[in-house]
Amino acid sequence: MQHKLLTRKPVGNPRRVWKQDTLLLNVASAGPMNSSWKGQSELTLRNTRRGVKTCIDAGFNMIGCLWAYPELAMDIVRTAERYGGNVLFQDLHRFGGMGANNVFCETNDYKGVIEDTKQWSCIKGYCMWDEPILQEHLEETRRMIDYCEQVRPDVLPYTVANPDYNSRCRWEDNAYAPYIDRYLDTIDPAQMSFDYYPVGKKEYDPTLQLDNSTMWSDLEIVRRAAQKRNIPMWFAYQAQRYPWHKIYYTFHFNMARAMAHAGILYGCKGLECYTEFNGFVDPATGGRGVYFDEQKRLNTELLALGNTLMALNCDRVIHDDTLLPDHPSMEGLRTPLEESELLESGLVPRTSISEHTDSYGNRYLMVLNRDYDQVATMSLKLKNTSHVYAVSKEDGEQSLIAQTADDFHVYLEPGDLKLYRIQDATEDPFTVEYYIDK
Image (cartoon, rainbow, N blue to C red; front, side, top):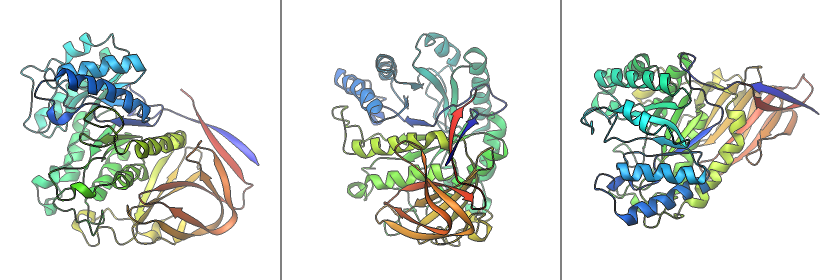
């Protein structure tokens, strides 16, 4: 069987300097964000230093300093430098802000911060503003990004959109899409990042799992807006318990797996793991927490798929009809199965697909089990007789699993996603591998 080596280009906003070569897996912080404004004891700092190593061992290739007290942020930097990790730097005491009203620094000294930290090779990005909403903050974020791009074109000038804008408005106002348009048109960021943490919101109902979560409509709004402007999309997923919510003791990692895979389903080139309590890092020690093995497995699988994922463009996302049925948030955003170019039928409850193409016209199909408690099995009927290749989560290689087939079988663990390449059966079978061409 022929094996084709195909080039792929780095992704990035064509109007910006920074470009992305690989799938980025970022963790919000290695330290205890919930206590970061109280000053840090030596025990906290020691645990955070150990936490950096735990993040690296779990397979994250970027570590944030979200909300970190300055001492803690610099400890993250020094430890990452020592162990070969990468840092997305933030110090809200000196630059930027968070949300609409919370600006923590008296003077926005982002120029001084960039100058003072330029010697640290582990700093690969600066978080300029966390969830700006007000127009004045969007414009200030734009100025910060423009400046960083001029003096440090090698690093990512990062910002993330607000996920709770809808909670301030009525759905009939259709407020979120205009906010995202205003955000992108004002800032024109290097990448479009947003977050959504559904487990614990008022809308969350454990019996419905994620069926009624507006996370899905937000993902589609952001996907379309970013694609229109040719900006890569990132998604921050929830990977923690919320101890103030009634489901504190029932949160399990398959919930996080389903949300992380939702981002991949929509074509994201970066994922951020949001955790500040007891997740894959033990907050009491900085060592391995209750979800370490599961988080490492997820990261290992995503990085194995990453070379292929970076070559793909998401064309459409299709859900079965158990997701947000008749919900106004999906008006104008839902793509019916009839519009699929690859699939005729076969979706079962709580499953979704997305269709992707590379720059050579090769077609890919992702299949997601949104159910985080039950396995999903299905026989997917193809629109055309095809060769079907599975993309391995171990090494990223493609293997032929169905030749000249009209359908194929899929088995998915709770919250799992699989990637397939679908090739017209009139062609001779071949496998594909990508390499970066800068």
